[in-house]
Length: 560
Image (cartoon, rainbow, N blue to C red; front, side):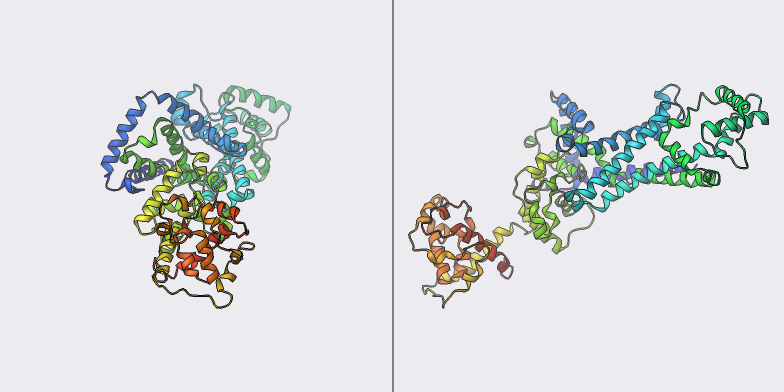
């Protein structure tokens, strides 16, 4: 009764969780294109698009992607053989246990003739599948504990998934092992299926045989017998038990655990079995109930996304379907951290200390930003999200490497658009505008200020070697003539405020605000043409770069 009610409650919780997720996929709006589209419109567009994809010639490509990328995990294989082995052990082992154990009475009994959980090959396969899951969990723990990138990005949900899997599998093995050596389990079997004669001597002979061959631990000296008793027990076993019980040694892990208990198996029989049964069942039901809110959901969402990705052209999607796909992609992430480990700007994290720089963590922030996960970001968190969003170079590396097939580049662009709508646009743009406004009054003043002695800016430009050598400039204008940005404009003085050589003059005069506020400083491509062309060896490009670096903290005090 407990198991039946527990399964119903867990299934109901799982169904409600899935319904909640589907509602989010149809309502969460990421990017300006998703605004103003109702859930009904998105659902209708999704069904129409799915039907069109199934009936299209690309169905073969979708099935191929589902098999190779979704089930066999080809994309993980291409990234890392160890990661593939970890995933495939957990996936194959979990799937085998689901079919041969959890759904044994519901599915396996009707698919496989003569199915019994205690006969081969099912007894051996169940232990093999459990061993595969344990091996996968062990490899996952090893990778997250030893690989720096994975260790850095491991979250509580990652630990919860591994702990829950380990508890389910280990409690299952311990329960099966205790049942193997339990004299009470043996007595229940004999009571339900007694030997042909049912005489005490026959039961004693069967006990002796099972104590020797199956490792059952009997109390009070029972299970002892000579050669004659063992022979009688063997015959009784073949007549009564062999059809339903393969040798316990085939359950290699459970049998080993049972034998390791030794005499303790006698005292644990009964109460210990019941406690382990409740632990195993409750852990399994908990995993089922919270499945939509854990990493386990990607077992279903990721293969489907990979199939959809192979069957559609993202650029041709309607705004409704694009909005739904973006929201769905948030739940396809398995947090494998491949994107974070290989991020081209990930090296900045140790210096900046903002985890939102890393794609995997930025995706979690996006979920909170768009309402797909509870807890709206605070103003401080919004500033960190903004920094992480705009430090991205849009190099496409995370998108190309994502083992789940998520178009992260598209999500980042949509995220930036949403931040801009909230007044949190590019920090570079805001700093540039603020400093330009700060420099504007001095541009309208005909008086030129001369530096007194050594201008302070000389001491500030020290991040690069010899960056303060602008005093060597003798106004030959070679840097401005070599600059490709200058040549882009028909009237560069009007468009850029100051040219590179004029910025060097400003610095020599100590006109710090004018140099920082010039649009030329912020439009610089850092191509080093100016620096390479300078006959005096002035580090023009390095100086312009450092000016931007110095300007950023000062802009915090200005009205942006």
